[in-house]
Length: 79
Image (cartoon, rainbow, N blue to C red):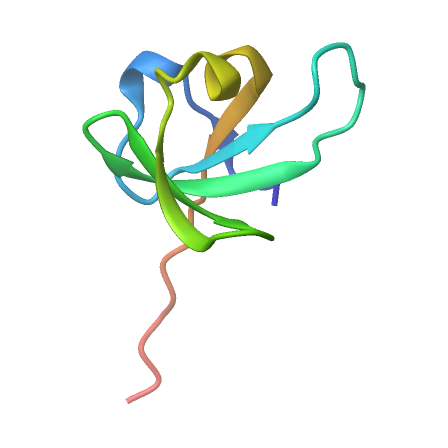
Protein backbone atom coordinates (compact mmCIF):
# COMPACT_ATOMS: atom_id res chain seq x y z
CA UNK A 1 0.00 0.00 0.00
CA UNK A 2 2.86 2.39 0.66
CA UNK A 3 3.71 2.35 -3.05
CA UNK A 4 0.10 2.70 -4.24
CA UNK A 5 -1.86 5.90 -4.77
CA UNK A 6 -0.15 9.25 -4.47
CA UNK A 7 1.72 11.02 -1.71
CA UNK A 8 -0.18 13.50 0.43
CA UNK A 9 1.55 16.14 2.58
CA UNK A 10 0.69 15.73 6.24
CA UNK A 11 -1.10 19.08 6.37
CA UNK A 12 -3.52 17.95 3.63
CA UNK A 13 -4.56 14.59 5.08
CA UNK A 14 -8.18 13.52 4.69
CA UNK A 15 -10.09 10.71 6.34
CA UNK A 16 -9.23 7.44 4.61
CA UNK A 17 -5.64 8.35 3.74
CA UNK A 18 -3.09 5.75 4.76
CA UNK A 19 -0.24 6.82 7.05
CA UNK A 20 3.08 4.99 7.34
CA UNK A 21 5.74 4.87 10.03
CA UNK A 22 9.25 3.54 10.61
CA UNK A 23 11.71 3.48 13.47
CA UNK A 24 14.02 6.52 13.47
CA UNK A 25 16.83 5.90 11.00
CA UNK A 26 15.26 2.70 9.66
CA UNK A 27 14.93 2.48 5.88
CA UNK A 28 11.75 0.39 5.78
CA UNK A 29 8.20 1.15 6.84
CA UNK A 30 7.13 -1.11 9.69
CA UNK A 31 3.71 0.20 10.72
CA UNK A 32 0.63 1.64 9.03
CA UNK A 33 -2.66 3.19 9.96
CA UNK A 34 -5.64 4.98 8.45
CA UNK A 35 -6.17 8.69 9.05
CA UNK A 36 -9.63 9.47 10.46
CA UNK A 37 -9.44 13.26 10.81
CA UNK A 38 -8.61 15.88 13.46
CA UNK A 39 -5.02 14.65 13.72
CA UNK A 40 -6.02 11.08 14.60
CA UNK A 41 -5.40 7.77 12.91
CA UNK A 42 -6.55 4.26 13.69
CA UNK A 43 -4.01 1.46 13.93
CA UNK A 44 -3.56 -1.95 15.46
CA UNK A 45 -1.18 -2.70 18.32
CA UNK A 46 -0.08 -6.09 19.58
CA UNK A 47 -0.79 -5.11 23.18
CA UNK A 48 -4.03 -3.08 22.98
CA UNK A 49 -5.66 -4.15 19.71
CA UNK A 50 -7.16 -1.44 17.49
CA UNK A 51 -6.65 2.07 18.89
CA UNK A 52 -6.87 5.72 17.93
CA UNK A 53 -3.54 7.55 18.03
CA UNK A 54 -2.52 11.16 17.48
CA UNK A 55 -0.09 12.16 14.75
CA UNK A 56 0.93 14.98 17.11
CA UNK A 57 2.13 12.50 19.73
CA UNK A 58 5.94 12.87 19.71
CA UNK A 59 6.42 9.09 19.50
CA UNK A 60 4.37 8.85 16.28
CA UNK A 61 5.47 12.21 14.91
CA UNK A 62 9.13 11.14 15.03
CA UNK A 63 8.30 7.92 13.16
CA UNK A 64 5.94 9.35 10.52
CA UNK A 65 7.35 8.69 7.04
CA UNK A 66 4.60 9.30 4.50
CA UNK A 67 0.91 9.40 3.74
CA UNK A 68 -0.82 8.02 0.68
CA UNK A 69 -4.23 8.66 -0.83
CA UNK A 70 -5.45 5.66 -2.76
CA UNK A 71 -7.36 6.24 -5.94
CA UNK A 72 -9.64 3.94 -7.79
CA UNK A 73 -10.19 4.51 -11.51
CA UNK A 74 -13.81 4.91 -12.53
CA UNK A 75 -15.29 1.75 -13.91
CA UNK A 76 -17.80 1.51 -16.68
CA UNK A 77 -21.19 0.22 -15.69
CA UNK A 78 -21.92 -3.34 -16.73
CA UNK A 79 -25.68 -2.96 -16.41
